[in-house]
Length: 65
Image (cartoon, rainbow, N blue to C red):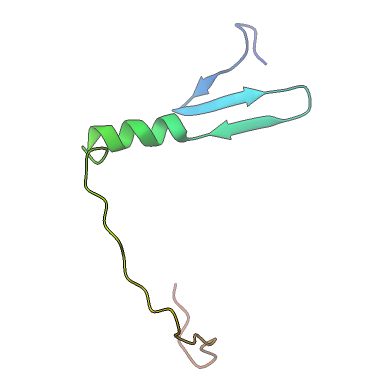
């Protein structure tokens, strides 16, 4: 809480404060970014993925930094 009242939006993040918890939500920020770059009207598409592929841990692989 602040001296001017309850904090609702800070740096584009929606803030909801209760007695025990504080919740932060980026929904409004994301919607504004999508609208800015006109991605809110973009067509959706399906990304294909192999269903029966086996993935193992690569013990001998190089670490990605």
